Length: 159
Image (tube, rainbow, N blue to C red; front, side, top):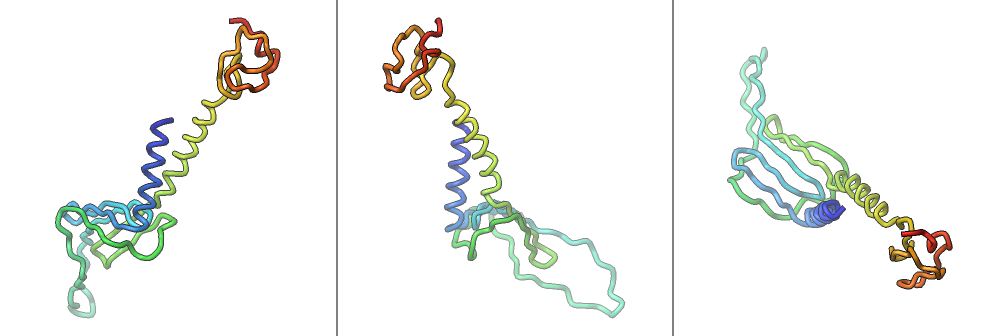
């Protein structure tokens, strides 16, 4: 359960921070990894397969204005808006990218953590439902720890 809380806190914090700042890592070889616009982001360069000659004669090659970033962190302001769904982008035939919104892993991890937390809060037999105090051997109908009324069946459970 504690690991789930840590992961949920990390994902929620990353989502909030990445909505305001880009946090991208360039591997120096055309690959980018990071967080931007509330999503985990991956980009890579792509070498298209050679094309057959055109029947209409020679055509000039397509020149793109994408340059490979040096190895290191890339910061700055993200684009407008937050990414709410899985998507991809392309810059001509050379660069491909994809993103996964951070709410997608946060949802199942948060649900599992919440269920584990609620499951751990159930009162054990012979204990107070309010505070968990062991009521075995007590004759009163009130928990001495928190003052919550208890049933007679709980107070008469043998040790």
